[in-house]
Length: 87
Image (cartoon, rainbow, N blue to C red):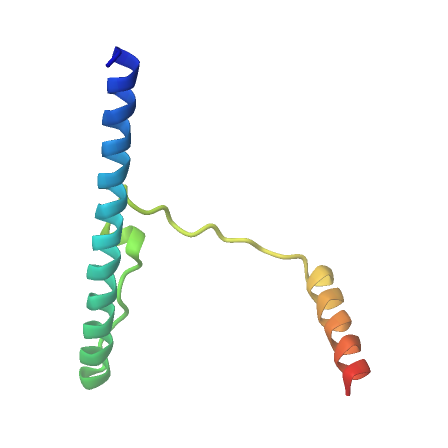
């Protein structure tokens, strides 16, 4: 094996481990959310933190995408027109 091939193998191994860690983190996060919702409903508690806050470095915060109100209005109107044609 050449040095470059060894580097590729190590990087692939690290990528696989990172994906495995993300999978386990998602499982832990979802379990925590379910427990929190159940306990929160019972006692009227607060909100569960987002996954990127619990596992920094594994997950990026969600990107906020703001749409122009005119674009949203145009999409809604085209949907309404298509729905009217069907019915």
